[in-house]
Length: 170
Image 1 (cartoon, helix red, strand yellow):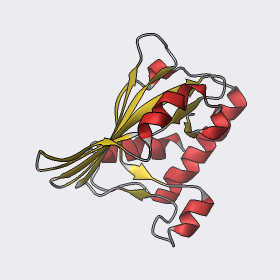
Image 2 (cartoon, helix red, strand yellow):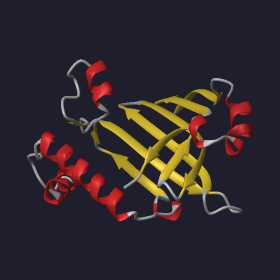
Image 3 (tube, helix red, strand yellow):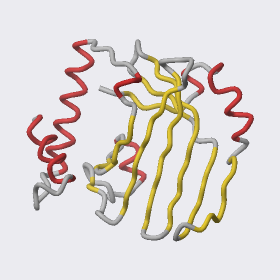
Image 4 (spheres, rainbow, N blue to C red):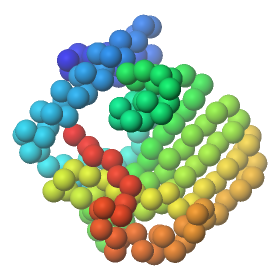
């Protein structure tokens, strides 16, 4: 199973011409997640720091149903779609920081940023996108807070996990 995940990584790094089957990748990820839950391994936020490229997407059964079969079991993103997540840490806290989600489609680039908080006992990274920057061929079209982001940023670290969007890492 881990072999499918390794093959997916190699495909995304242009080391393989043919991608592994999406179904095999999703199955391997689900098995890996189950093993991680059984092992009760705790991670820390410093392990996520840096930039990560998103190359394969899937979702919950509910999400896949809403997508109407477009996702199938999962899907590799086309090479011309560049999605990158970058995590940085606040100086005063090892569990708090910022996230930058950058999506580039040709000359158009959308960057969403906001605060993050890592809940180490549950291996959960809570986040909120509060600012957006939109550029076309390097020309700044928009930069500012979105959806009342300034106020949401101020309240973010006082919120309970149930009030936040999050990813579970395994």
